[in-house]
Length: 191
Image 1 (tube, rainbow, N blue to C red):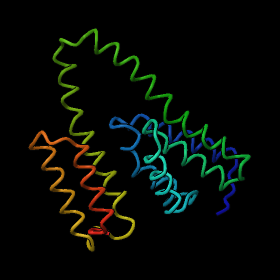
Image 2 (image 1 turned 90 degrees about the horizontal axis):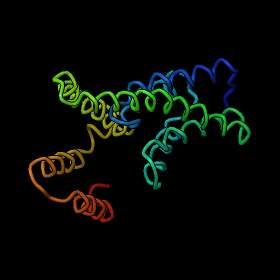
Image 3 (image 1 turned 90 degrees about the vertical axis):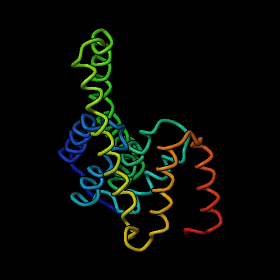
């Protein structure tokens, strides 16, 4: 895939990730639906497969959860001009997603720590939980929908719901659940 990006496009990419940084209260992964809309649906700077591959590769690699953002930027740069522009894409997306949220988090955490006893601080913390859950649910929805999984793969949804209930209602260790899920996948029972 080859695309042509001018300076205004690079600035638009940077500003989009600046805005996404402010929305990423559940982590950068919670902004995946908006990234998909911007990069794949609206601007066609990434293909569907490049988008999902970026997330899959980064999530499989050791390191911070935000690596997928850099990989998406790298791929946009590769599509725009090969290895010469790939580092620019990485830099633009990573600075965009990291600068605002890191700065705000630093100052807000200091303030909240100093004012931890105030009802406003406790209320804010409790009120953010549903927002984070909603953003993570939207991310799961987007990541599971590219191949029509909703209608045709009910056993996967049943396994997901059962796993969520076990995690929520018991003290069952999540690594054991991950191992069971890996075994089910390796056996091809849901493939």
